[in-house]
Length: 337
Image (cartoon, rainbow, N blue to C red; front, side):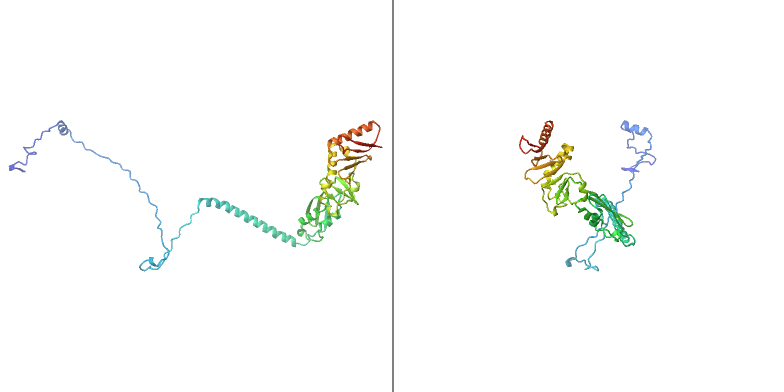
């Protein structure tokens, strides 16, 4: 090579004018030590790119307007929107299964009702199942004929065409009937079971009537003649009051007295022969020994205690009372025989 006109031999590795000595200790150490080969290892985690969900192309359209028609071959044609799947709200999904179950149950019940109606129609059309006997049980004051006449169940009628509810209502209209049960006894019988009311006293109104604890007037009965019950007299009532409680207010003083006396002294209550309501503001009681006592309409426990004391004192004196009047305050009027 040439440098500024001087010729340098090609055998020389360095030019003569270049200072080849290292100037610092770092350069000397670097020249003395052999160079080591350096390797670099780099690791890279290659992540697979996420696949983006396919984007549904949403077709938009507008209403037909003459000024916005597309140009070209499809001009004048209105585009229709693409069908989108219907998504139900979560609460609709939760309610769907119960609603389906309810619908199935309702369908089964409807099928059962329909089959029952068809079965009933078939049984009603069958021959041989006709009413030929009516049995009555539970009667004492009523007779079997009275119950059968009230039932109005025609003999020869198909057993499954009998109106059991109507028969029960007609028999229950009898004044003595408290409860009634009607049932079929296949193949040809009908049973009517009756629970009668219990009389508390007798009523003398030409015929012998009865009255229960509620003040309901009961129709005459042959069985009443053998009952050991007190007689309530002095009360007028009309025939339409039978089987009702129309006269309950007028009968209440006598019924309350009998119930009160039964609670206080049952043996004394058995000795009451008659309770007369004919005198206004007075309750006239006659016992089986002929003693007559007059009370206020509402009898108190003090009056009964006074009655027991007076009767006991008369017995000790060997006298018999004819009548006693307890209507005066703190006084008892006594008449002896």
